[in-house]
Amino acid sequence: MAGTLYIVPTPIGNLGDMTLRAKETLEGADFVAAEDTRVGGKLLMLLGIKKPLVSYHEHSSRNAMESIIERIASGESCALITDAGTPAVSDPGEKLVAACAQSGIPVCALPGACAAITALSASGLASRRFCFEGFLPENATERKERIAELAREKRTFILYISPHDAESYLKELASAFGSRKCVLAKELTKLHERYFRGTAESLCEEFSALSAPEKKGEYVFICEGMPEEEAFWKNMTVVEHVEHYISLGLSKMDACKQVSRDRGVGKGEIYKIINT
Image (cartoon, rainbow, N blue to C red; front, side, top):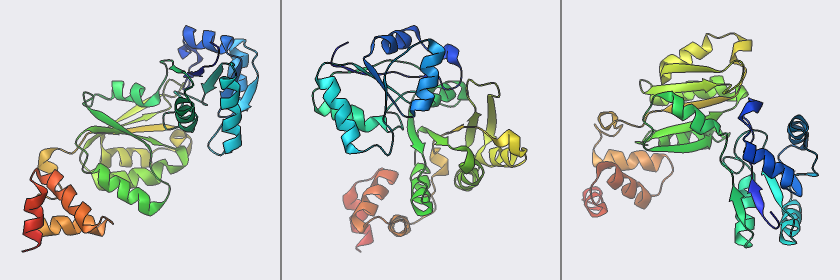
């Protein structure tokens, strides 16, 4: 195990989902890099493992990351864990993994718990092609732009939603995706696990009707991609279509490129129409 960064998934709610290999890797590592050492320390205690813990999270300094890399480069093995789920997926561990890879340090990823895949597998929505968006931007303008991009996505897409954002974000998603089939997964693998199924609008209404205690929890939102017949630009002229993207902040050239992708025609044809 010397000189290697191990990516070790941890349970998202049920300790029984800790794999034997993950436990053995934690036992064999020289030290553990944890998103929150208090959470990581509790997990190790429950597993009967005693290991040195170092903190590595979203606000860790460059020096903290370099210190971890130096230790691994000197021959120590490090197990990277997050508070729940797979490290480096919508998680600050992404930067540490990239830095190790760039430095030529071996990176070994273990399979294990992941809320996005768990929810998708039980969603009943198309899963042959899908995309993962993680958390939406906190900035309202950026979030609006991201949702507008997702409105054009033809694949099933997956979002994470924090408890304090759930109600307001679901209203925004309902406004954008209305009658599309969606699934909202709550508290996966935990005692109060629950799946809400319906349209974006019906899920928003159902969620709003819940009591405050019932709304607590972590959420995964899954939505079907844009059906061909639902194309927002269907009744737009090419000029209106281009102007729509310009209004979202794209340059004229980028707007034309996106319109050509939407309509399945060459960029030259789009340029010709808007310049006549």
